[in-house]
Image 1 (cartoon, rainbow, N blue to C red):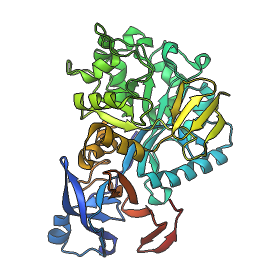
Image 2 (tube, rainbow, N blue to C red):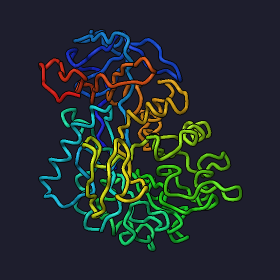
Image 3 (cartoon, rainbow, N blue to C red):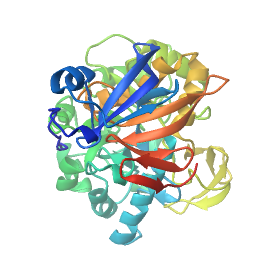
Image 4 (cartoon, rainbow, N blue to C red):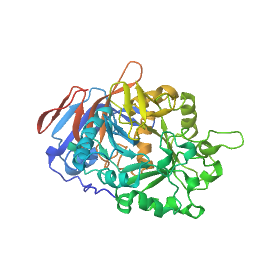
Length: 437
């Protein structure tokens, strides 16, 4: 599953080059003064040396950012919906689904998310067959807002002992390994529209491990362990590279059985999972566990929201797609009449600010958890999640608040400013009114 990349040559008309000056840029774990050049035609970050000394041209516009922080656009690899739109809801017509998806993409950018993996929960086969064709990698266009990097399918191959809010009667066992995935999701969907598959590895036939993760990886698909009772030894020998929402829907570490968390956080095997998602909403995982996880495996932590379609909606009671009633209070979602968590209702920006507070890390260090690390996990290092020449010019301009938290001031997609806090986007084509924060 590949996305067409434009030529990385820099022999382009001068009016496509924009210079972002007087800004702070993350370098290692520090913020340093810098300048960034983007090409709004190719959608790439370009080298100042290539422009000024190679092509000997001047940018058409210079924007003074007055000391604000410029970072790569955020990447959320697990989000179930937002603003009333559920990626797993197949009840609408194809036209209505596409319209709802377009609106979600437009609104996502206001939270700093420029790329994401739309997540489909455990469903009947026909639901996957209907919605997944809409959720594959998006075309390269800044006008579309946030873009899909390919769908994340969380289920239905989950362990019923750790189902969370996934309906037990929907869950299946992947008894035929790869063929089960091809049947349930649809072969075309699996290889063209899906980027991440979450399943319980202990449910796979022994003959499927450790070969299945390698087969999927050869197709640029990541296999992630989640909603699982897998043991420490099962996971470190599985060849699986990712764990879904660490600490949630799995056994917790025991003195004689470290479980999935131990496999991710203990440096014992080159075949252990290198990456893990974690929900830093302050509800799903205790701040101390987030700090422990980060300091144990800092290069593997990907902040995710696991947000539901209720993100952005008022507090109250809502009916989920499976008929269950969910109560929303602020960023907390619970099944009606219980204390069982039903996904989250926070933005990735909120998770980032929480993470900085929980772990006492600065912006330059923490920003990797929503940019560089998820890009590496997805096999997109050097394309997304960085500010290197040749990478996609997906950017966030951040304002640092007095308490050390950050807010999104501007969002750029493929070298074009697509959102700013004031509600007005200014670019060389003119002035375009956008929705306000």
